[in-house]
Image 1 (tube, rainbow, N blue to C red):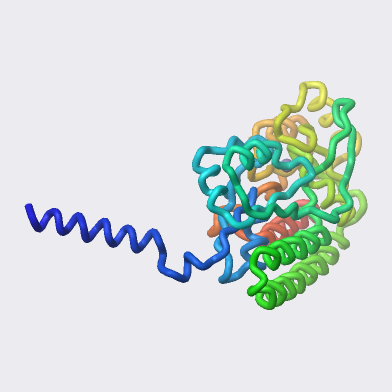
Image 2 (cartoon, rainbow, N blue to C red):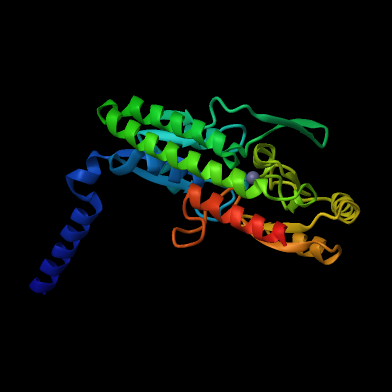
Length: 298
Ligand SMILES: [Zn+2]
């Protein structure tokens, strides 16, 4: 019996030490990002000084996310919170208020020239600004400045990490422009299920049509779908693309009623799990460009 109690005590002690993670982990800045793509960007800039958690994880849909009590606890313990803004995280205000979060909030899209549109006679803002790498650079600058504000001792590290990352984003931007620049004009129209590629299309010269609009909250009406099917036929739109965060059935139906082919899966509002093809912001771009160019070149 004695041995048993000691064994339990030992286990409890080991767990306690393991959970506290030693002095190093305790010293780290605790950052929360609202969704996985932003989480990766914060990780790139924060490096070893920052511990990052994303509320909406890989393949998750932040438009319709419902925060959990665990999210409120995580947020309460954080030093800094990064959100996309532009109306993307409609659930954040309530979560923030209920959590008692006292840290700094950074809106990563600050400075972006937002796309405004009318949907169902309502004026709305398109939140998907990260799908342009030029905007991604603004996000990185905002993340860097936010981290410096809560951790001035790390200024040099954050500046160096951000400069390196900005260089990588610029390199990817040149590759994207080169790859998509080769597509003939008549191949520059695509269908996705929800309208996540407005900034992407504007930046890289693609016309993107989406039955569901800029949020996944409302389903496409039969009328919207019929209209898109007519449009695909009339304009000979070559391909429709699945998204990692949405249901495939609508696009299957659209593809089967037209000559458009299924072009593969694009990563829109979330990364893949780390071992998948789009585990980081830049891998998401590489994967999407590969998928688009393969489908639209043939
Ligand atoms: Zn979206």
